[in-house]
Length: 135
Ligand code: NI
Image 1 (tube, protein in one colour):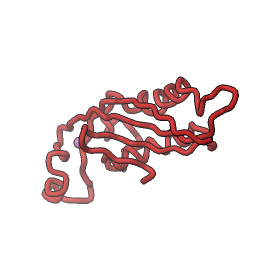
Image 2 (cartoon, protein in one colour; image 1 turned 180 degrees about the vertical axis):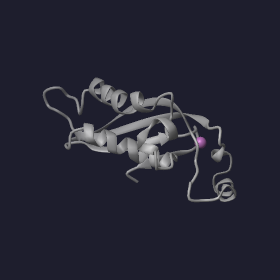
Image 3 (cartoon, helix red, strand yellow; image 1 turned 180 degrees about the horizontal axis):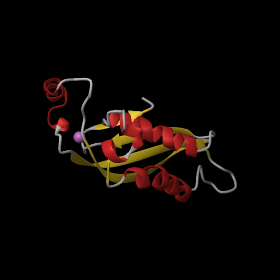
Image 4 (cartoon, helix red, strand yellow; image 1 turned 30 degrees about the vertical axis):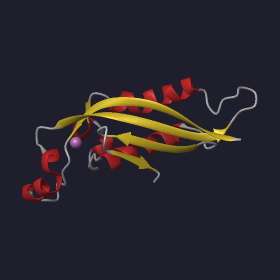
């Protein structure tokens, strides 16, 4: 019997979207305000979905305290109150779009969560704009 369990988390971070191979005009044309050289921030909301078998002894798919601690260690401590472009090596040469942040978070969590679980990550950059990986 497989059941999906979810854990929400959030972090605040600053970023700037730009492609250093492009001219300033092209960056402004494509990224607009998100290319602001003096950065801007978002309140990112994260939803982590795990699918797995219910353990007959505990009745759990996973102890949500364990999942909470993994998210805290792998995501919140790494990205909360950071400048993603400057402070986080993950984005040293990767544009910190919601799409790329979501994939980076998935990879970090995937490495920390057992193979018996299916994993999906949803990241809200604003209440109305969000991405999900795997699609
Ligand atoms: Ni932005």
